[in-house]
Length: 115
Image 1 (spheres, rainbow, N blue to C red):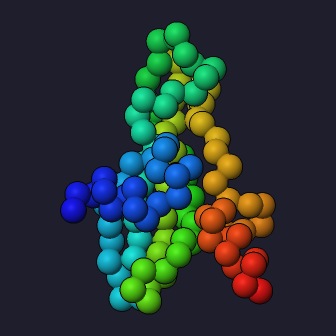
Image 2 (cartoon, rainbow, N blue to C red; image 1 turned 120 degrees about the vertical axis):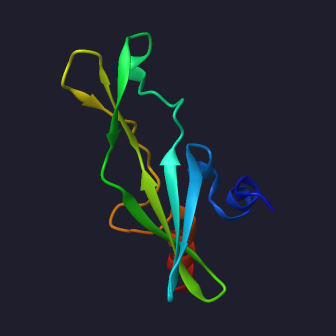
């Protein structure tokens, strides 16, 4: 099983569509999936301009359905871009979780339904 196959089987579609699973950290009580925004997803404001990659935004960490009794965290890194020879940063914004929750929309809906 490749990491892409694992990604498609476990991740919500809205996350799998824009992030690539790059690493998995197996810890004692949890598993952390490290995901990076796909490089080809340049912010709309910069399309057609000369741009440079400018690192990553602070990661967003969301809880998803547990795996084998361990908590599963998705650590998402969005790319940061800027137009060449400028200092203003741009990044894409995604609605990956409901306001006030640090869980994926799918897992959040499951939790709301069971409580």
